[in-house]
Picture 1 (cartoon, helix red, strand yellow):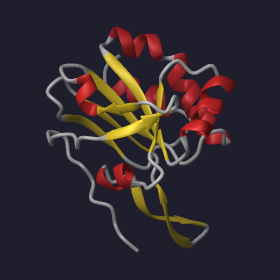
Picture 2 (cartoon, helix red, strand yellow; picture 1 turned 45 degrees about the vertical axis):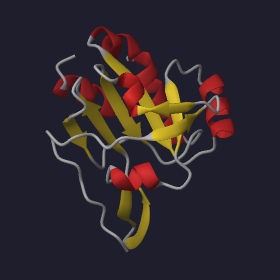
Picture 3 (tube, rainbow, N blue to C red; picture 1 turned 90 degrees about the vertical axis):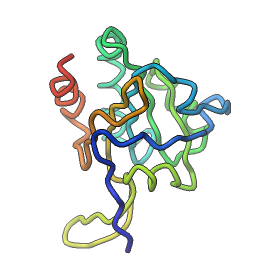
Picture 4 (spheres, rainbow, N blue to C red; picture 1 turned 120 degrees about the horizontal axis):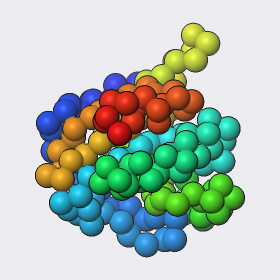
Amino acid sequence: MSTAKKLEIGEKAPAFKLLDHKGDKTSLADFKGKKVILYFYPAAATPGCTKEACDFNDNLNSFKKAGFTVLGVSPDAPEKLAKFKKAEALNFTLLSDPELELHKTYGAFGKKSMYGREYEGVIRSTFAIDEKGKISLALYNVKATGHVAMLRKQLEI
């Protein structure tokens, strides 16, 4: 089992180009000069991931006022992301990473354990990326519930 390399504050955020919920390509370069919240979650339309996505959606205006664009990333196909976005009336972009390449690059995939059993899976993680494309906050193993409030507190939003 691989242990994911975790990104550090001040590191350059790894570039990406992924399909979004509409099947359009979205890249980090599209947000050059802007701040981004990039969060990784295991699966669209599951209870924890739905709670987390709705929390982000409910707090979207405060993130926007602070200059952040929110992007969610999961291994789900664009079609599933589109259904999830519509079902939950989400107002931010969802990105598809079916090969888990970006998850692994950001350290958001690796060794996990539940009930004493070890396995590999998506590590719920969130990153704040500044206008210069550097990591300004890297949070790993966050909980779906209460995570957005904690993030807002850490970012002083």
